[in-house]
Image (cartoon, rainbow, N blue to C red):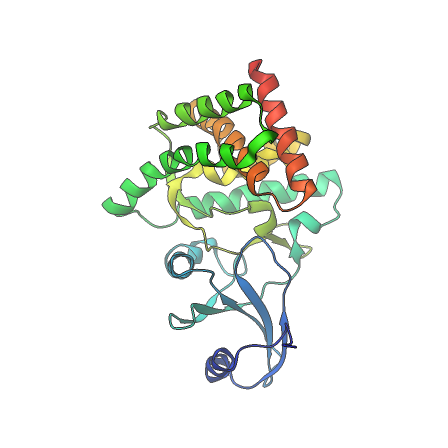
Length: 293
């Protein structure tokens, strides 16, 4: 039986050519990214690194671009640093961040509000990093339309988890999302922000996992937080946007409602655990009640 902690020989050989001999290798549990990640320890100084293999060439391209062109704007210690890449292996070596995912932190309400305020500042810095080319600007403007186009497929996959009225509601959300064309663009993380934030006991969290990063309407980075956490704890939402520097505008509020609903339907269709589906159902029911469906 293959040791799940082991690295394939070609991958380990590349890593050791870059870092030197490794004394420990450990496969990390899945996090906010679908990539495979190992923690490796360099023998010469016991420094820890993460060796990450992307799930696809597109994810590799997005993440390496992010680390080279946008992540440096976050400042030292606020995100991993890119050490080396291998397009052949779809692999990258990153410095390891201290701490644990913010979603696992046990903090007082006051401390958590401070962390979310700091997280808002960090996400704002990411959104302002880099300048889109004409091509990436066009792609960013079309991003929400692609999400709207996928709604019918996700609704079909959800099957009898959605009523006929709910399918009509999902269609209305998707149609409305397509006409929102004055949304602020920026360089977005694109994944689950709360799971990608790490906290190590300092007031300011760090951000990792940029395999979904791209230029897009910045509102997409608020969806995962808005689905459950902010709905249950609105003071955290207020703290985040105070740190971010502004509250969502009117069109962004509309987009956030639509995106949250479509994300819930996708979770119903693809959720791998009862908890995911239960949370998605709660979100969908909340949105329906707000508009009287």
